[in-house]
Image 1 (spheres, rainbow, N blue to C red):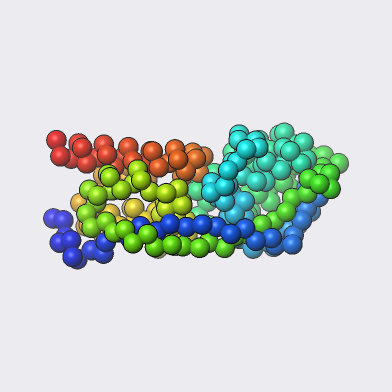
Image 2: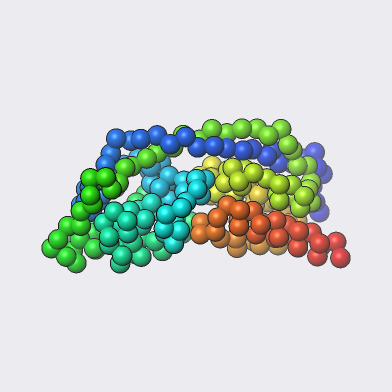
Length: 225
């Protein structure tokens, strides 16, 4: 049985923007990059993987994180770029596990050669972190069926906040859509499972919004037929 609507909080649609902040940490070679990765704030690692989704990416669209892009453009290390480029941060439970994966890959590359790859001075890697500013759109969803019309018109900032960044905020490290729908005592378990199948990292936010829109539209269309 679906709980009464007043027993579940409405879904509050938020929007967000990120402000890039320089950490002062820089790397000119692969060894320096590894040393900084050991101690850099996890928010910086988060930025260099997920932050690219919220900013236009014109260079190296095949590389979805800044470390892989720098390996390719700055160090001219194609094989290293490929190894780093296939990392999916959503496969790791937290930033510390992702940090260790990066360090392991870089150390493996350093062990393969006696030469430490260097970048030109104008190609150094600058570690950036971000401050997120969250806005309340004052839009509320009171029934899951409203997702069908609401999601296609959500801003990319809203998609990022509710589907990606939510994984750092929710108790079970899931997106806000699944967290909200899970409050209906299993009534939308099928939909929750479909949302879980959506790939969060490699698509653009526009593609992700289209994918979520299709999931919601199809689910409620079939449920009403």
